[in-house]
Image (tube, rainbow, N blue to C red):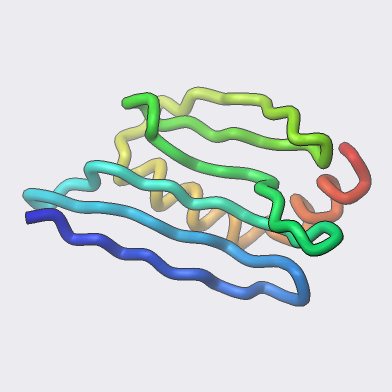
Length: 102
């Protein structure tokens, strides 16, 4: 039976992290961790660590919604841990870059 962990962390006004992962047989079977910024009343994804294509990767978005995908040579467990740590540590930088259009 799969165990699901799903929560939000609010970093500041209009900035949050969405964390979701599933485990089965002591292994991560699916995960998505993303930083979101509220732009004019709409939540936009800034950076997301995910495995929906059956491999771990990171998508970085610009304010127009364009994304750059980077494959991660990491297990799902390691990519989840790294993505969570990266967003916790660098959320302010990512938010500023996103809002400036970098």
